[in-house]
Every structure is written in structure tokens, then in C-alpha cells.
Image (cartoon, rainbow, N blue to C red; front, top):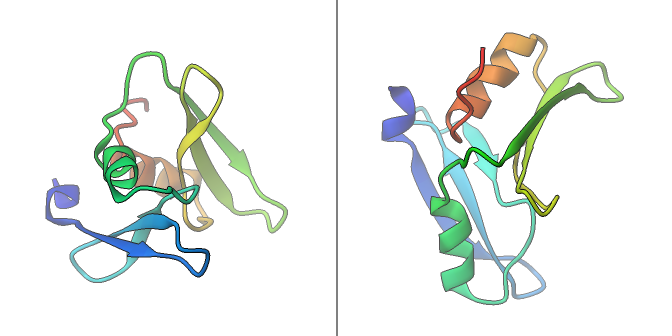
Length: 104
């Protein structure tokens, strides 16, 4: 799978919190942290988190008419989300698969 060749980057934002970004092998940004973390360890744990059966995947259309997705943990907290909108819903689902989405 192409996602196996994705590269991750951990950085500190302007508030001094740790965030991560995920890039496809062609350099395109395909994911990013949905929040900042006080510790680099917590940031990396979120970055490496695998999808769980209790996670809820949501696909929706944003105000610009583009397709997006987000994944929520059982506590309702967003743990992953699309970093951009997609013209086609299938492209949003393809991006979500990089983060563990297994639906059709």
C-alpha cells in the first residue's frame, strides 16, 4: 500500500506545542494532528495510534462543497481528520484508509 511509504514529521507550533504531519511519498500533505500536545511523547503516541473498533468514522461535505472525514474515539474526541477537502467522496475515503478506515 502506498501509505506504507508515507513520512511523518513532528514539529513545535508557534505556541510551543508538538504537532505531527503526514506526507505521501510524492511530498503531498495527507494528514496532520488535530490538536497540539504539551509533550512530544503524547504527540508521537497520537501519530502512531491505530484505528480501533470503537472509533467512529464520519464523512461529510464542508461549506465549500468538498468531501472531508474525521475519526472520533469512543470518548467523542477527534483523533484524526482530513487535512484538506476532496472533490470526490471516494478520494476522501481513500485518504481515510491511510489512517485505518476499513469501510467501503
